[in-house]
Length: 345
View 1: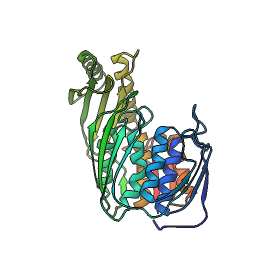
View 2: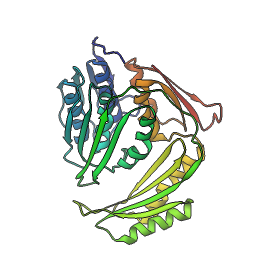
View 3: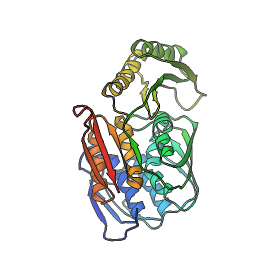
């Protein structure tokens, strides 16, 4: 993508789903195009509008990576001006200071670091398993393998798990820029099995056992295990379900919470995975969101289920930057349930 220095792009954060994805995608594209950004009504459709801690760290990380001048970068701010300079490689560390998602910070700066002029490393501290955000397991098993297929050299390590409300997690990501090739992901390929992993920390083991027992009744599991995590700042539990195919993997995470039984945690996760299995498309709802920006860099297409408002809003931001042509239309193989997303640079 060519750098551009024309007048600022102006975006309304209340459009579409009206959440933080508008901010993150806009920051990524502003860095890649070296184009000033003015954003108003940030997260206007959320119960607490404006920048929260994790969104502020996204802005700070983007500013550090691109040498940007920023105004409006403070908790609660609903307007932001972001004026990036050149993307630079380096060793970066960012701490959210809460259970906010480290993976959303990664999502913001990864496209820029893939286009940098040298190797980079990111150390991010905060949450690794959050509601309304991709988990570290999803990024490692579903998203990054597709980037590697495109030619990226990216490796992620979870050094410490972080859960709500205390956070305290840490991930490290090593990135070496490389030319990306188009991705065309239209079929899943042969099924390789479904794995269930129950994570527990400072909680009775029977919680994990009940989650696995419930999962085995609702899915045909090929592998299952319990991982007891080292002690941390708060008790925690998560159920990870991974459906593996030759061309793609889908990861669903059910997070334990006080007052919700282990059986209900497992049922919710199983229902979500069964919905993915039913529509037959290779790309799940959350992977579709993640793939759009890499395809802006390289082009390509994929088949997914019915588009979410999140995906459509993400596409609208990309179109606003004139970064790529995006077409989302019913797929000929099953126009009621499958959609083809085409991204042309």
